[in-house]
Image (tube, rainbow, N blue to C red; front, side, top):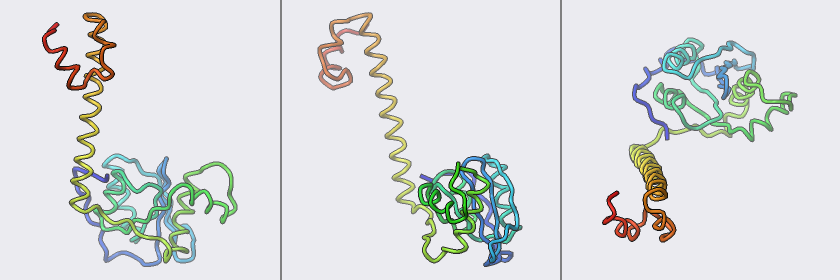
Amino acid sequence: MPRTTHPAPPCPRTHRRPDRRAGLGQNDPVVCVVDGAGQVVQRFTVRHISAGLKELLKRLANAGCGEIAIERPDGPVVVSLLEAALTVVVISPNPLKDLRSRYGSVGNKDDHFDAYVLADTLRTDRARLRPLLPDSPATVTLGTTCGARKDLVGHRAALANRLRAHLQSALPGAVGLFSELDSAISLKFLAPFDT
């Protein structure tokens, strides 16, 4: 679920050029900006930390970009792009792999080339691509709740493992009595043994 603690400053719409599109390679991350003819206008690398995200937004604004294609629909980069009022389009890795052949490359993954393919595909196939929408408040709440539940389940499993390890040394016969050590019946059985 996209989450962030510091909202990104909005990208000024007054300087946007409708013919400018950007693509963001996933690993490096490399950004490629193309014009209406598919010519590279700018290419740069940014960091995923907050300073890098601010730089990314600033450089996209300076290039006049209003739309960007990326490979992943989540994470701090997506949150920052959406908060900056940019149109974000997701082209997942499998279709991107097929799109590389359109440009004559079928070899290994290259983020510089992928950034160009993402930007140019956004330019040529924009009508077929759906923009990513920001999460609704209900979705954000659900994501936060699911994340908290996942943390609690992990904590419970860790405590059950600690209990099992302690019982192996203190009360080895109790370990095999129950299929799950953290079940209500096994915990009730073990309550009198406060070692």
